[in-house]
Image 1 (cartoon, rainbow, N blue to C red):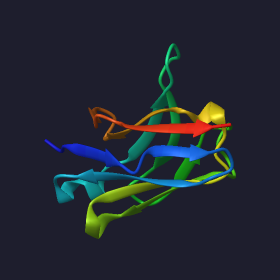
Image 2: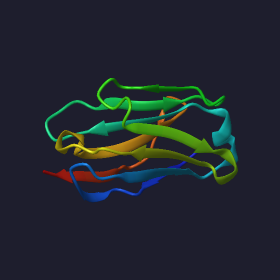
Image 3: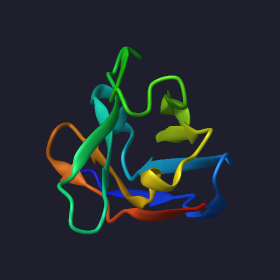
Image 4: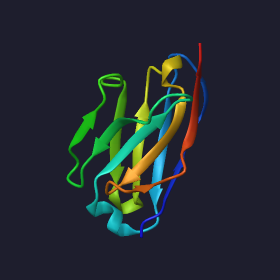
Length: 112
């Protein structure tokens, strides 16, 4: 089974940028679609971005034009580049592989 570890979160001012990484434990990771989700306190978990094994991407309307998902299969890593961050982007960001395996998440906090 693949294990996932997220990193790259932190505290940033509004308008700033962060790049999150989701690193997998096995190279079979390259065969799977990977999603980034986020969960803010008191809110439901929501999908932020998805990338298929072939590199096709999809984004939530709230992040289109600001966030970019990409993958480097040689490094077993999926990235989420987040630009133009807003306070409402504050959440724990989690990656999911193959629709069922989750990482533990990384906290992103955007100050106004």
